[in-house]
Image (tube, rainbow, N blue to C red; front, top):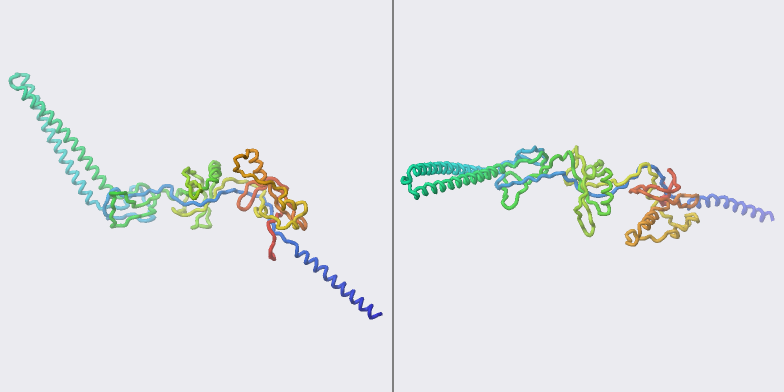
Amino acid sequence: MRRWLKRLVILVLVLGAGYAAYLPVSAKMREQSKPKWRTAKVTQGRIVYDVRATGTIEPVLKVSIGSFVSGPITDLYADFNQEVQQGDLLARIDPRLFDAAVARDQASLDTRRADVQRATALYKQSVRNEQRAVALRDENEDFISPREMDSYHFERMSLEAQLRVAKAAVKQAESALETSQANLAYTEIRSPVDGMVINRLINQGQTLAAQFQTPELFQVVPDMEKKMHVIATIDEADVGSILQAKENGLPVEFKVSAYPDDAFEGEIEQIRKNATTTENVVTYPVVVAAANPELKLLPGMTAQLSFQVDEREDAIRIPNAALRFYPPNKSLVREQDRKLLDGADDEEDKDLDDAHLTEAERAELLDKRSRRHVWVQDGEFLRAAPVKIGLSNWKYTELVEGDLKIGDELVIGQQTGEQP
């Protein structure tokens, strides 16, 4: 009897010890099996809504300098990246043929002027002969016959016409000389503006042929340090927002790959109306003007632009990750919110582009779509917090209505591994 009782006591002690050890282990296991949530806080600050686009850096004005005359390049005075002033000599074409043409036309002009002097002398002589004949005939009609009078008269008229022809020939010779002098001047390629040579398309000794088309020799960009253009391509859906941003004078920020740590700022200068359609996508060019005092912005660079189209100062901000979060299981949500997971309170959306949608219905639908739910931890379960949202960017969304306060923790996901 004592042995049995002793064994019973030992068994009870063992069972008690096992149960005592099981309770904390079981509690720890239950605690470990509970889902752990990643959270983000509701904050207050600035929200900027922007439109992203890609553009190309271009100079405000790019002057292409060509040649009007043909011939070999004998001298080259300008090179890449050289600063030039208006009137500076950039290159010279062999002038020998044009010098000869000027000399030829000058000689021709001298000849025509001599013809004018000869025709003038003959004309004046014919005038005096006619005057003498008239005087003699007035003295006595028998001194000069009518035929002789006609001869003097028509000779004077003929010489007068020859004088006019000689004077016209002088004008033709002067025009020819001006042309040859202009062609001679064109053998000196000069810069029409102050600026920087960004491209040189010729070499010394190269022969130009300008008979069929004007060859391009240099490209000069004036005032590149003052202002550059960024030509951006904007989708038609965003043109209205860009136009509103231009009217409000909102800034544009952009970056270039050459300077990844630098942010450049510009302003919308022009929204061009020449649309481009590519694979049924309609885009419009938008010109952004930016200062370039350090000459960091070079023609041809690719820019990543951010057009600021709206902003809110001191807005209550919800992390976008909280709006994207959706509880994976009903058992994790308190009972009164589980219907949200079934979509019981959701109505079928209407298409905003429906032709039969009235303005009132459109406004109602927009208001409905702006009402969302975020999730907060409430004890062992998640609780839905209804919110109405407003302006949004890539990271935050404005809280327009809702019971959330600054500092509230919103669930953005479930921890999948051991956190440091």
